[in-house]
Length: 286
Ligand code: C5P
Ligand code: MG
Image (spheres, rainbow, N blue to C red):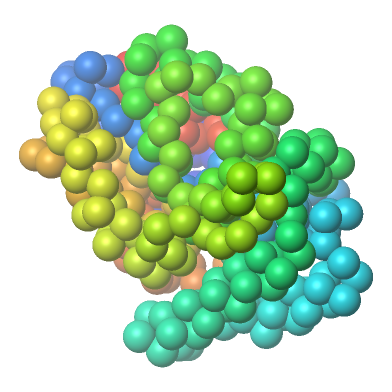
């Protein structure tokens, strides 16, 4: 087994199966691999020095682009709906309409703020957004091997792109599916484009993007990274799938959610703020 899998943050339901998947992927080589990753709280840190780090939504919520009154409303929404998002006693069926409500209300508030496109970069620069330790190696390694990385996010595409651009890792092998802002001709936010992506419809989002997965048809092995159970569906559009290894970051409510994460992710990373495990797995299989 790969030494990093003995790290104290690592939990596995079935280590033998993980080993088999890793061996198959290693034998097939990097030309058969694609990586699909969630963004917020998967590629970015959940906390730093005991303080929560922002999601792509929170980067805007906390920025100068939003009025104090609107900030209070957005924070209210967060306080209301985030506990529901991570509540392990409620079913997905129960949570889904509430999540749609959260995203819809938040997007409406953002649109009312008449955000200017050219101001996004500064909002990101002044934010406390942080990619996980080891992100540079992760992005650079995939780029060097020409392995496609799909970032599939229910956050805000324009903001997350800016985060990875400013970090110098928005390489040409990276593609993003997310919620994108629609600006009018003077560069003022007027709406969000296309179908809303929230945490529980990534399956539908994946199936809308058949063209992307068709292009990657020969890449039948998938490394999937997520932090929510909704992220497990991000690979539903992959064609001719052979092996998939699912790595899940369990950041919050660890004891309550451990069992459900172990049941659905092959490797669970508990309160692990690093990319160590994905990085060492990539070194092993490529
Ligand atoms: O990139 P990812 O798919 O993880 O983005 C979704 C995350 O954004 C959710 O986990 C949720 O907690 C967060 N969110 C937020 N503010 C909103 C809506 C979602 O911080 N208005
Ligand atoms: Mg996430």
